[in-house]
Image 1 (tube, rainbow over the protein chains, first blue to last red):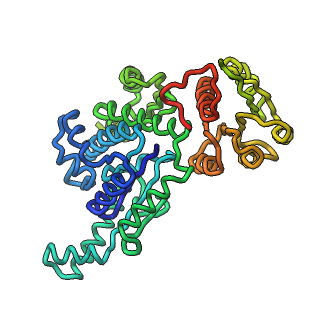
Image 2 (image 1 turned 30 degrees about the vertical axis):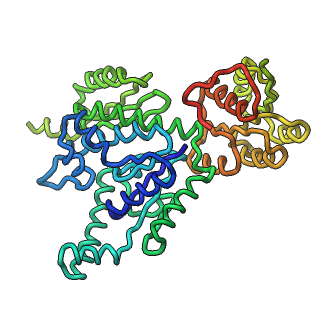
Image 3 (image 1 turned 180 degrees about the vertical axis):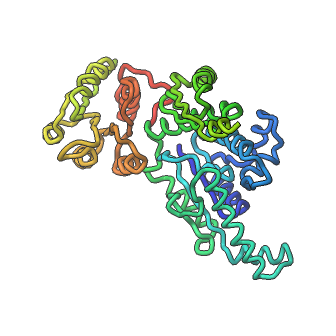
Length: 274
Length: 137
């Protein structure tokens, strides 16, 4: 009746572990296969969604607004699936946005660094020193990605309920350990945790709907009451609030919309210089 | 035939008991309301309740202590925790210590009725309430 969210410093190892855990426990596996569904719904190439999960916007590259939208669309789809029970989720950054849900066990798998370096050496034909540098660079990259995307450091062990190092514990034992941990009563769904996950799902759905028109929108939901925060020029505030109220109010599950529009000082200042 | 559930409701805010007692009576619960945790513990020592509903944050004796007392004295009793200060760590602690369910305030009387009905089902008691699809526990 619970959810297991697995992340790892290696996507491939995390995926293998998540699939093995799902199989051992008879749970469903929720991985990047759902990106196909998101791609169809929002008419975005699937590769761009994968890129959004792996790269952050650079100064001259990917647009920040577009990146945020792609992540929001993924989040919306993942949250919808996470309302179901008995799932192992991996590779969709859910460990960074399923927060405060007590029946979600968040597991971080640390790959065997030396083994990963050896693999790089044999696959890429590079020196051990270069392979080690690349491995460390990738780790730093993941940290920065998680900070940019969700303002959380995914390499910080305190973010997780369970951290397993594959250099110390072999994968079969790790799967057993995850299975034992999820059986603790503390990870059992309860009225409160079910409410939490429904609130996160509703907020994700509302945000995904509003983002195209209002890229800076922030959404919080609780029991059908949705609080939306955004910025606008003083003269646009009322109009913007009304549009948000109308659009969000039409989303299934939304019972009341509260909108807070604060002055967009940057645009206001830019306009005053014209 | 529908049966009656014996319920003890403990919350130091009088409005909670006042509001929930009639709501639970509607589904066949005989509710004893307490605002004082010490008095509630004394009553728990005297009588076996089917369900204890307790607030968590109270002066002197908190809800976790009440939970521990009930599980020690009457393991079959289902304890439902309610709190206005819900947090993941507290929810997990309560569940680990044997709570049947954990509900964040504010909630609708129907939310508690659903959980009480689930407790009744777990105890094999037939009460006058249909559980909807989203009840936790």
